[in-house]
Image (cartoon, rainbow, N blue to C red; front, top):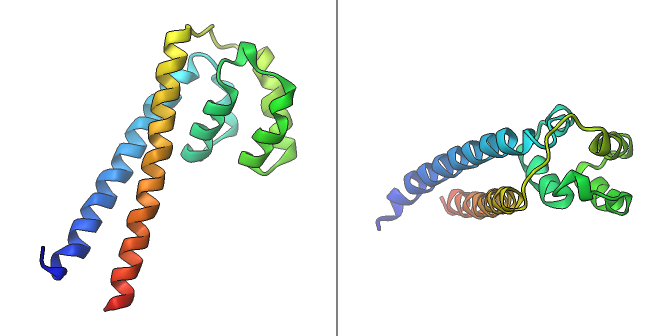
Length: 131
């Protein structure tokens, strides 16, 4: 591959990765939203949403012991408490174990794509610094 093609290839890879992240998180919010719709009200950031989904899982099995882990994700004790309070009172429907497994797989895929995007950005920075 010619070196002049690298920035263009990285740009398209970044664009595709961002589109995939957006598509997957939209599906996550839609699917998990049936179970815990209040979470979307509190969390706008797609990466935080995916991380929280993995930590919270089935809200019916959610426990206060996860408070520190949730706060590590949102970095806001007041918001953490709102999420913890909302879980048992949620208007969402129960989620089947197989659905929860599928949602978790998608959330983990989003987190892997975010990591891949960070690696692409680092490569793009290094190419920019070379020129």
